[in-house]
Structures are given as structure tokens and as C-alpha cells.
Length: 101
Image 1 (cartoon, one colour):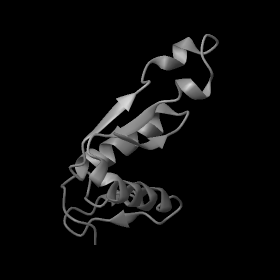
Image 2 (cartoon, helix red, strand yellow):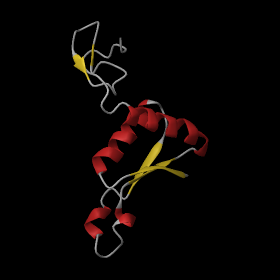
Image 3 (tube, helix red, strand yellow):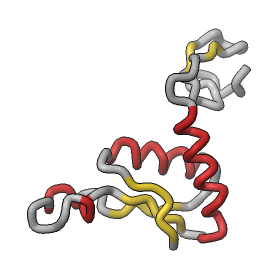
Image 4 (tube, helix red, strand yellow):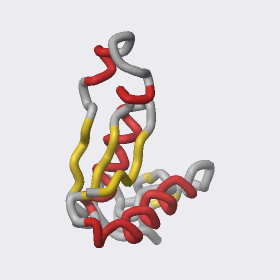
């Protein structure tokens, strides 16, 4: 297993997990509840971590996470099918699951 992503914010780690699982990359979330142990263990040892089950997925997983991170500050898009606004990081419409643009 290889560590693919870690952050002090559990929400960001869980989001990365959801993105990778949507691409059919199997991951494990470690330290999900470890922040309650801060003081007994190092702060950095309590950060949530995302680990790949299959090491062969490492390069693909890194590329996917970097791509998702690069959409920050990008423009929203409007679905051509249902006219719903979507965040730039969405590849599919959250409302009707149609592809971007």
C-alpha cells in the first residue's frame, strides 16, 4: 500500500477518497478518528491519510488528485441537459449526471 494523500482536514481527505473511488481506484482511509488522540500522539501522526490498495494505481491516483486540485478557482459550468450550475471540479452534472459541456 502507498500513501496517496493526507491533510489535516478530514473533509478534504474524504473528498479525495470519493474522487478516487469514482474512478474505480480502491483506497483505505486511515486515522479517520485519530484527531481525538492529539496530545497523546503528534499532531501530524493524527492527520487522516488515504492509502491505495493497489500500488499500480499510484501514478493515476496522483494525477487525478492533482487535476481535482487544479480546478480551484475555475469557472462553474452550466449543464446543457438540465441547465443546472455545477462546480468546475465536477465532470458530471450533480443533478442529472450528464457530462460536462
